[in-house]
Length: 374
Image (cartoon, rainbow, N blue to C red; front, side, top):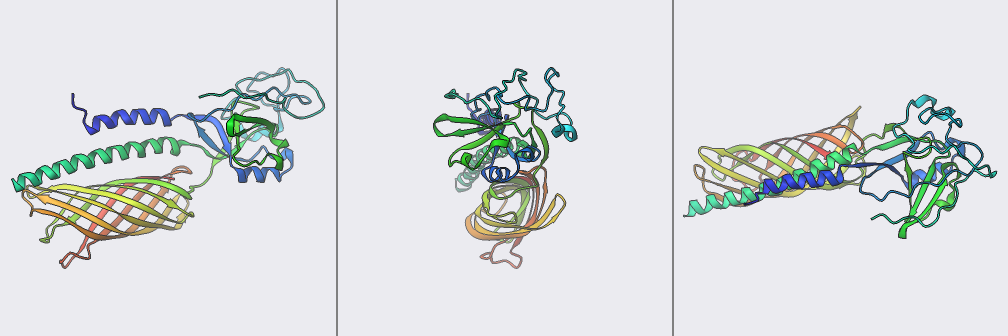
């Protein structure tokens, strides 16, 4: 039985979504956030911790050891059922997003507020006929590339888009797991973190199922800084060498980097294909594109783009036989609506200018709806 690109992509989609779509109840605390927390008094560290949710495929830290300090560190009275929180830290927040998995009521009074030391952690693990055949083969190849790219885009949207990145609330005595290379592991209460715990190549992780639980207090605004993956689908037109303008469906895939919140540079691959006058055409573009978002109105962002690259164009049958390559310049406007810290919907309205085309009107329109994952 022959496996088509689309069949293979359906299987790949299930695999990628299954592996990457699960999010953990563990959260990483960035290093700059650790530095900020250390500068605060210990009893003020739990109400607003910037945390980034980890994937289910990440290595979970070993369970935190029992508390060895004076009384209950979790804001609960001994003997109160799990889920009833008596401490003053939690009154404004309601029930936690992650509940404690195990509540230990047997505390050892040793005169110090610390967790018992951990041992070695566990390790997880005819000419026209030939031209038509060429266009058909090119369409199949492009369809396979686009299908794989869509699988990647949807999987990233499911994982990165749903991934929590924002403020969390925990008890000041919540255990912080310090995880280093070679499976090194140490547990420190949040209010006892000090400069000595800021080590290179060590990650700080908090688990929602420990302590008194974890409260989500709100995601951060859209954060474009860093790598981005974007895709869009819509319509586009193409000009043939004899001034015939044809139009059809269009898809665009982009990978790039935003050094700040407003500007980014992306590599672009786009295709357009359609049928006109009984013939068919195929256009494929590769280039660079700059994006700029200077205007922000609540969750709506307004900007523009400009770019350049090379276009490959094939057409035939009822259309003039064409097999050519030529440079292009693209430009237009952008609208973006942010859904989460890492995911947004996009609208792109623009044009493609063909400087080498010997026509009075060298521009063709482009319209695309899509999503951006940061």
